[in-house]
Image (cartoon, rainbow, N blue to C red; front, side, top):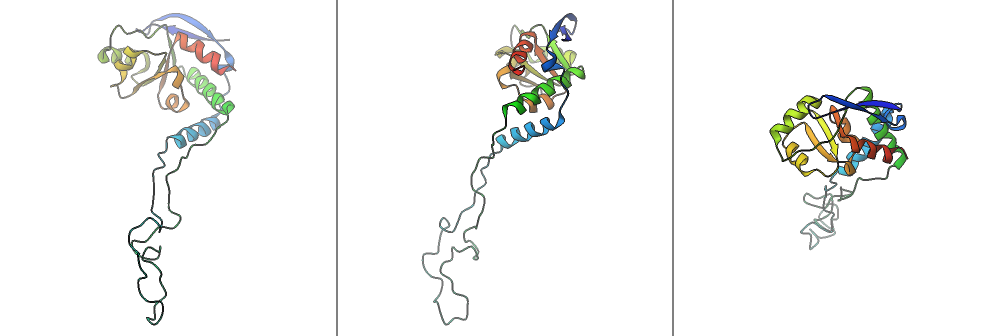
Length: 206
């Protein structure tokens, strides 16, 4: 079992917590990071690009000119793709870029990310993330101490914490249910409350 220090909000060590080696001390697999971040980014793509085919553009109600006798190639409609203002052939249409990714790969990537932050000593476990009221200034001071002002903060539903950090440009609050690889890698430190360590352990050890 690996052991992590537990801090209070003043970054004073107040104890330790034993954590599972199967979640917090695995070999880091960089390729899993690539696969899972690529999958997350693909799901976020809007896929709204769209063009009109020849049946959708305006005009072309009649034949542009007679079939024979002009010396020009025959044309049936101004909406054909070879005309300016005509339809687009095989152009983009609204679509989803999302695809399925094996659950083992996703969980393996999260275990690797937690292990990476633990090995870098950038995984900060705090007793609790309790705020009496939403205060951005107070939150800024706390996370400057805990994580140099650049952290992903993971807790259960915590409205005061969420409101306190939402205007801090490099601190992001995340409900544990939305825990994901991209946000972990996108922040220098990962801050977890002690109960969330146990919850992630239970989920990712499977």
